[in-house]
Image 1 (cartoon, rainbow, N blue to C red):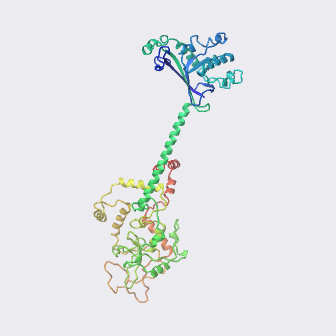
Image 2: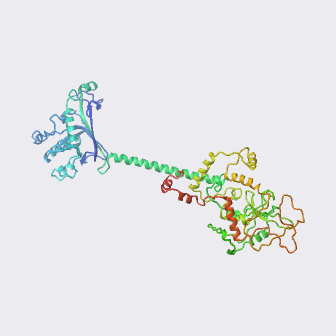
Image 3: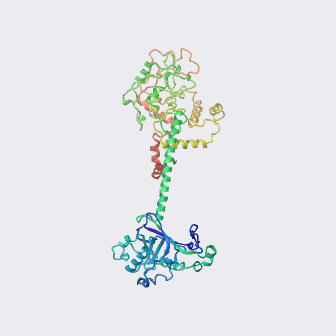
Length: 570
C-alpha cells in the first residue's frame, strides 16, 4: 500500500543466549539517549506486493548480505558503511526485518532482492535510495525509467514484500545510524547510560515502521483528518437542524393549543389578521335595541331586503384596495340571546362606527336592530358585519376578538411562533404604569390592585374613559345619507320618555310627516364606508400573512440560515 510516513526508533532487544525466552521482551529506549527519526510524504511506493490494506510495514533495519564473489560489493562500498547492521548483527530470533540498500545497476538490485527473499519470509519491506540523490525531494514516479530492471516489471511480482524509495538525504541518515547501532551496548551512543538501565548483554538496534494509507489512491493522512473533521461538523449541523425543526414543531403545537384554550389572541397581539366566518357571524345575537328580544325572522328578512344590489350606490370615497367578500342575499335568522346583558341608553347609546344613536323600541317605534359581539358591545349590523367578515375579527371598541373560544387558524407557521414569543418576552419586561384615569382606578380595584396587561384591555380602558366624556351630547353622524331624506320635525312627546333613554323623536308625528328612520340604510356604499371607518378605529392591523411580510424584510442569507435552523429569531 502507499506509504505516507516512515519512523525509526531504537529498541533494547534481549539476548536470547542469556534471557529467559518466556519472559523476554523488548523495550523502546528514550529518544533522549537513542536515535529517533521521522519523515512524512516524501516516500515513493514502487510495489505493494505482500502488504494488506491499512497494515503498517515494520521490522528491524538491516542491509542484506551479498555473495563474496559479487561485484556489487565494491560498487556499494561508497554508499553502504562497512559496519552497517547486517543479519549477523541481529538476535537469532524470528524478528520481522526491513532491508535497506542503494539502487545501483539492475544486476545489483536483483542480488539485493534475492538476498532478502532468501531470509525465509522474515523481510516485510525493502527501502531503496538512489546513490546520485542527496536531496530531500520525493524520488521519481514509479513509472520512471530509473526503476526499470529490464524484466518488464516482473521483479515487483516475484518478491513477496513491498518496495519503497526514500530520498537520498534520509537514506544517508539511516545508513549512518545503522552503522552506529550495529555493535555491543557499550559501543553505541550513550552506551554508558544504557548499561545502567538495561542488561549490557542486550542488543540495541534500529526499528522501522512504515505507515501506509490503505490504498494507493487514498489521500494523505492530513486530508483524511480534515475530511473526518468536516464529516463531524456536518453531523453536528444535521443533528442541530433536526433538533431545531423538532423544537419548532413542538412550539407550533403549543401555540395552537394555547390559541384553542383562549390563552392567546393572535390578532390582538398583532401576530396574524383573522376574520369572522359567515357562519359564526350569523350565530351572533341580533335583537331590537332596548328590549333584548331576538329579531323575528320576518323582521330580519325585511332588514336584509334593504340591501340594494346596484353597484352605482357605492361612494367614490369608499374605494378600497381590499375588495369585500360577497354578501349573502338573505340574512339568516339570528341565534337567541343567552346572556343577561341588556345595554341601556346610558351604557351604549350610540353605534361607535357611524356615531348614530340607537332608538329604543317603544309604542310608536319598532327600535333599532343591533348586533351584539361576544364582548357585549353593540353595533348596527350594517356597520359591523362587513368589517368582521372582511377586515378583522376584533371589536372596533375594545379590541377583543369576536371569534369563539377555541377558534384557531388552519395553519400555525414558524413566523407566528416567533412573533408570539417576541411579544411575550416584551410583555414580561414591561412594567405597568400607575393608573391615570378614573376608569383605570376602577379596573385597578376590580383586578386586585393590578392593571390589565394585555394591549386590548389597555385600549379598552382608554376607550371607556374617553367615551364617558362624550355621553352628554347628541352624536352627529358622518355617514353618507341619501339626498332625498325627509327631515322630521321636533315636537313635544305625548308620553314620558323612559329614564336614561335619550331620543330626539316623538311617539306621535304631525299629520302628513314620514315616520322617523331608526335603521341606517344598507346600501353597498354605506357598508363600505362603515367598514373603512371601523378599520380606522382599529388602528394598525396585523399582517394577513406573517410569513410573506417577514420574507419581504428578511435578508436572503437569514432566510437560508432559517431554513436550516428554524428556531433562530429575527
